[in-house]
View 1 (tube, one colour):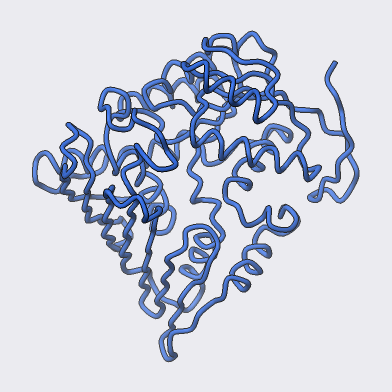
View 2 (cartoon, one colour):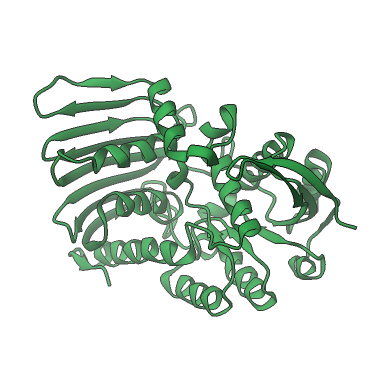
Length: 373
């Protein structure tokens, strides 16, 4: 029998009984921990009644770790059991190669999914999954987590305020240590057959989605890639010039280096005709702002937080929960399931970012600019 709990639905300002959502998980790695931690915080705060039903991974030790640490009722090494477990939704956090079969099976069973990025190893896989999801009218959200970043949501609002002029350019640097060591422990990211690409596909698809969100559609891209680590097909350096339909341009430098002591870093500068914005935080932090006739001023972390909460309105979770993009994206997914609305970011949004990645890889091979179809 499914448990029902009474929780306070802030957006409705009434007490309602919410069904306990039964969740399954494929892939018990680093990113799965981020999601499960966030889901448990939502449950502990009384915002989302949920049950962790079934965890799956090819390595039994990982499954047992998740059962013991997070309270999953059961575990398996066979992902097909997910479709017999009476789930309300499935989290797909496995290595990229395994997304295709999981998504197609979920679409066939009509099981709502949250799928981590990158969606697939190449554009053809992503197109196939997007078609399957859309034809099945499946509730499906992608892990493009920067869409939920307080800093980037506030920066985007400041970028498009009245009177600042047209967006002109962006300078974006994204670097992290090669994610096979440190906290990641993901050796599969150095196997081209499993991942499909390197820093550009695996990490900076976030950045390309963000730039598209800020500036609109990309018309053309020119890219160069390098392979300092010697891993075949796994680029650890990518430099892109993006041209947008709006007339704006952006440069993106994406790096996987060997400095374990240097955590993931993003530095973003945005230029309008009459405003400059910059931040080195990709979650919650400060933003530098300079307008046409004034000095550079700093929006404090507290000011960014206040602006972000105003943007969320009644949908803002309490306290520090509103600071975490992972909490916010999971809350958005679960609320979409409860309300029957389409989750976002969806597969169509992911497909648009993958088309830019595909054009960038073509450009790097041909040493020439490539139009984004």
